[in-house]
Every structure is written in structure tokens, then in C-alpha cells.
Length: 93
Image (cartoon, rainbow, N blue to C red; front, side, top):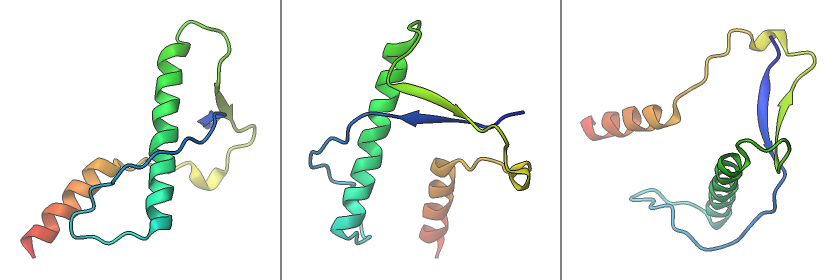
């Protein structure tokens, strides 16, 4: 079966937002990258909600014609769960 990805064709928007780093130190470049990805994803989710029922919008689904066979066994990672487990492990130490 083909592999599909959601591709966002929108504009990058700016605006300061603190990631709430706690005791971790992030470089300005890291914070800019995180802010860009977060804001772009918020736009994707908004466009998906607004696009329901319309034929074509800003969000397109990309489907690979020839999926990479080495990725057949790939299992997505729940990043939220991984972060919770890492945070719990750090507290135990």
C-alpha cells in the first residue's frame, strides 16, 4: 500500500512564543525552529478543519509512487508518550 504524508503549502508566520523549557537550555536557532514547526502545524490543523467537504485547499496529501521497502516495518512513535517516560525516568534518578 502507498505511503501518504500531509504536506503544507502555507506561509511561515512569525511571533514570539516561549517553549517553556524548564531547566533545559535552548539556542535561539532551536527555539526558532520549534516555533516554526509548531505554528506551521497549527496552520495545517486549521486548514484541515476548514477544508472538510471542499475539493481542494492548501493541504494536499502526498503519496509515494514507490515506497521504500526498508520502511515496511516502521512503527510511528508517540512523541508525547516518549517525553512523559523520559521525564519520569529523569525524576527517578
